[in-house]
Image 1 (cartoon, rainbow, N blue to C red):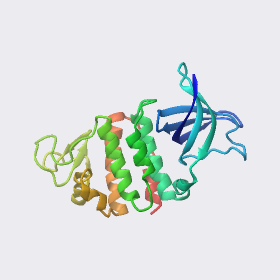
Image 2: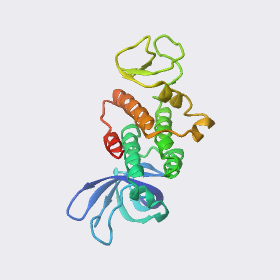
Image 3: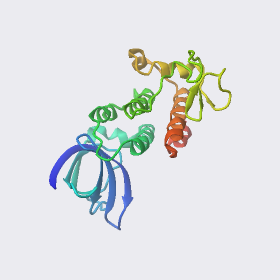
Amino acid sequence: MRRVVSEGIIYKIIKYSDYSAIAFSFLKDYGKVKLFINKAFTKKKGLNKFLPGEIDFQKKDESDLNKCYGIKYDTSKSYFIENPEIFIRLNIVFNVIDILYYDEEQDETLFKYIYSLNEKNMSRWTIYVLNFILKKQGIGKSYDFCEKCGENVNKIVLHKGMFSCEKCEYDGLHLSKECTKILQKVYTQEFKELAISKEDEISILEFLLNYIESVTSKKIKGLSVLKELG
């Protein structure tokens, strides 16, 4: 048992009592960590979901619940919580992290990508980060070839967790030719310069989240809110 400080983000808060809470955090040095926060709902010590900061806590070896002493927020990232478009995208990504990452599974690269989110890159950011997570967790797939016939695909069809071409599979979630091209470029330098429309971004996110849900059998929330933002 030791007291440590790590950069991190609280992504889920559960009220424990009138003043205390259980907070779920993602830390640069420790991955997913559960925190007990006393006086979490006072005016002096309010919690901010998705606002990064330095988290001071007691790291316990014999328990998964760790006592938090304080959080020094990084106010340069205040747009994380002030911009609804960014807030909702963070919510979607952290819902996926909560499902696919084990407790205390450290991933400094993912943490760096989270910190890189801004208003200019947000339409590309969510797509890239979700693909990074899928690849890191060993469930990422190629968007270039049909899993059934092995031929190149122009439009991907998702059916029962498989990526197919339209010749091999009619039923399922169809991705447009343009959206398929975007996914095929996701790990290239060209992707970093792409201008992705909100409509195409939502189509791709719907495809990716449906795929994750087919693999994990868990519902991922947030996309409907992003659609409503227009």
